Image (tube, rainbow, N blue to C red; front, side):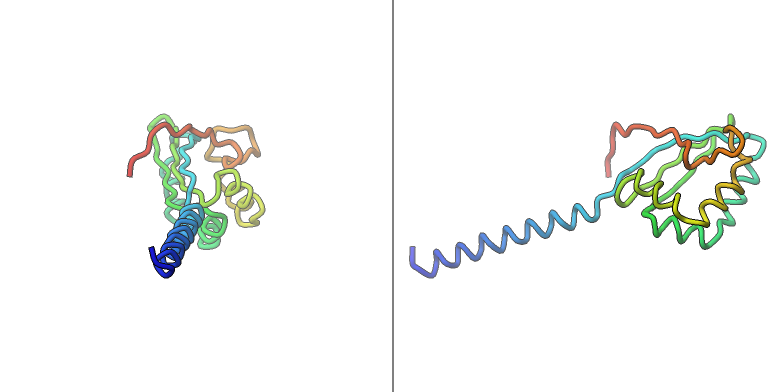
Length: 138
């Protein structure tokens, strides 16, 4: 092995190592927590509930994005059960905590509270029943 080939080998190793570290960092920064959760509304109010979400306030949508909520979907079952799915940038707990600091979220939760089967004045975002992920495939 020549002096230059040993040097070239160390450079190649260093570049591979740096590339690996960069990829690991990118993967960590792109990591999301997939969350399934359940809530319950009064079933007779589903049409209005859906309409409110169809007409979501732009500032509420912006707050969700700002606090890491992505790919957020809510499903309805005839008994009033809602199943939600969301991908959170950091963690679900961090995204919920971020929304709790948003003034628009307080207004939204107050406005939406009558839809939910919760004690009076309780907010749905603080009463989600989180499901445990047991399988995922892309």
